[in-house]
Length: 166
Image (cartoon, rainbow, N blue to C red; front, side, top):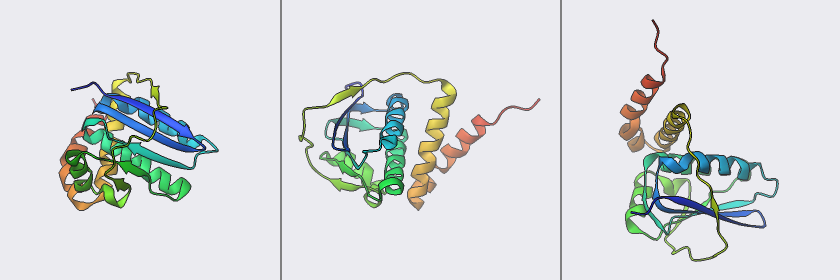
């Protein structure tokens, strides 16, 4: 397995995010920071997520992608495009209800070679915990199956977040 990395390209307010290799929690802090900056850009018009070179994608990363779609819908009233030519990953996306929040295209994603890499930095444990919890809450909001699948995990994460009283 290839360690995960994130690349992006931008042209006239359209951003293409390419997620490569093992797309896991370790990338989420940097991806979230990038997304916040992207949404703050006055020229931002649309976003495409390219999963053509993703080997795996964990639920925290899926939750962050769902959040990206929800934010795009609020800000620009569009569903982002998600390129997913790999049947295994597409099946996961469909099982999570992503067809409701993304335009899923089973395409190879070979549209540009002008990607620049997003530097991935470590985040503190508290920040990581909050990101995992938020991502899974977003996934739960997509459909009943997700709510059932992630309910226990979210409860556990919420319980771990509670400060201990003495």
